[in-house]
Image 1 (tube, rainbow, N blue to C red):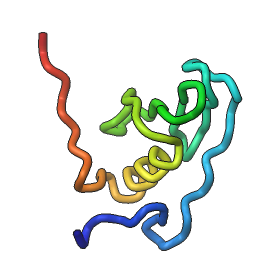
Image 2 (image 1 turned 180 degrees about the vertical axis):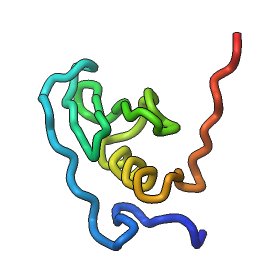
Image 3 (image 1 turned 90 degrees about the vertical axis):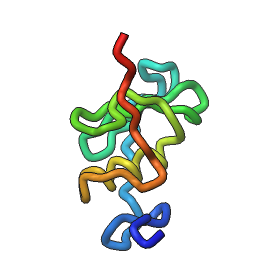
Length: 94
């Protein structure tokens, strides 16, 4: 895939800025981080985290570790896109 960005580099070839620890025990019971305006809240252990970022297509979704979410935040802010292997499915209407 020529349009995919290899982890963990940013578009300019630099490694991503590290996420900033906000608190060791956040709303999901694990660490909470901040990165470029996004809030990343993790379960205890920090292996499953939720992204909170208004306007991001994955806002409110829980998945992955902070480093994965940082990559997705950077890609969205820098190019307004997601990697080709992530597909967003709209929620079903009741």
